Length: 344
Image (cartoon, rainbow, N blue to C red):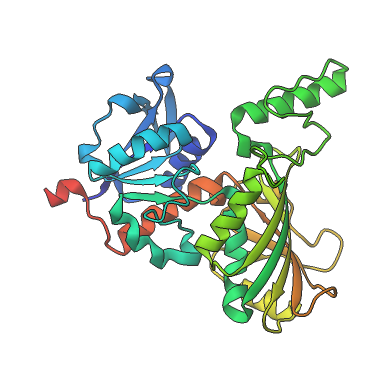
């Protein structure tokens, strides 16, 4: 007997992607339920070759539901995830609300799947920030081999990370530039069309943004608290796909050739690294794909035991929806949960 799965926030970018990925991966669900806010009641969303009508999250009974993929935003998750967990339904949350809670595992299956066992304390598992997820997939196998001391990362993050309204704004601004209409900014603090914005999330007292802070603390929690990391996060006029330029300093020697071989064998990684024109991956090519792509692997001559890599992934998939579904698969494959109907 299969599982009953609810997708909360089913009308959003990530929610729709979750439904697509559940169908693509033939997730063992007998029933999938789409949940949204009251204004989206009966809105139709696709799940494989089926059409689901959205039900209202606030009035849904989770007592017979096994897993809730939560992508309804931080405020909703903060209020509802504990209530859902108390019903015996495991919440896999895509917001930042629960990530640093010591009683909530923060999981990237290719990196720290063993940490999932702590989920039973609150029945909540956190999905990391999209830029963190692809980074730690690339760092993990290198850290296992040569021990990472320090990471300097600059991100080039697509507008889809800020939601559908952000994607619409990029489209509208781009069109306005071409037809000489006024360019209006609502979602972003400055124009995003034909521009880059070094501000994602709010500024903190130390001058870093919260997005940059997330990358630091999440990498430490997922991978190793001893790793020193500093980030500059930048929004770029790309619809889907986050890119990262990553400088890594190791305790032990590691060459670019060794790193390339290690990453080729690593789970979730796909190396495209030809030292020729076009011999690398861009976010356009990564869109719709599951892998974390790694290119431009080279020695960093400015430090001992240093490497530089270029890392690209679809932020709606590995950065959010795919990772959440993979977490659910770990729960099932390790027999950490059983279907409630069967258990009854």
